[in-house]
Length: 211
Ligand SMILES: C[S@@+](CC[C@H](N)C(=O)[O-])C[C@H]1O[C@@H](n2cnc3c(N)ncnc32)[C@H](O)[C@@H]1O
Image (tube, rainbow, N blue to C red):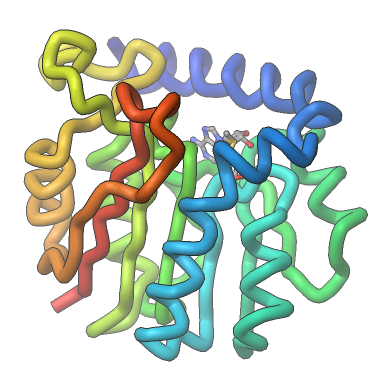
């Protein structure tokens, strides 16, 4: 797949999210699907003492807003490609800097940030390109935390060889390889606890540090 085709498919994905944005904040969806990864990411940021943070593919901005309210960082940027999701994010908070940009081409200078986080969206990205970009915008010692769907069933795992089509849920080993390939040292990787009925496909959090 060429970069133009990949970008075209990803634009279709982000337009779909604009369509779905009104349903996104339903309390049951947030509680069971999205909140557990957000809690994990906030714990990582708190432990690391991050002050300049970007939440990539921030959607309607629930995590970015929580980071702002709970951690009081110096900078919190919420970045997404979907106008509809960003419109809801903007109405949620005016203390987060909301930006429209792709994960693979971020509007930050080299070494500008202490932490880059992303939840429930990594499967949509050009994964090596996004991780290289996270590495570029982080300062030395900066933190990256990626929480993403990752099946426990090898038969349900799409092959990394299948390229981007338009989504790929990386296995734990693939995630480690991607992180290390981008220049990160892995500091933690674990499954995020969830109710039993969501166990076949569950979230994996991988945390790394820029050397
Ligand atoms: C399931 S939502 C996740 C939202 C949020 N991170 C959360 O945990 O609630 C996925 C989001 O990824 C965004 N997205 C998909 N591909 C993207 C890309 N390449 N760059 C930036 N955002 C992207 C979509 O627009 C959508 O808002």
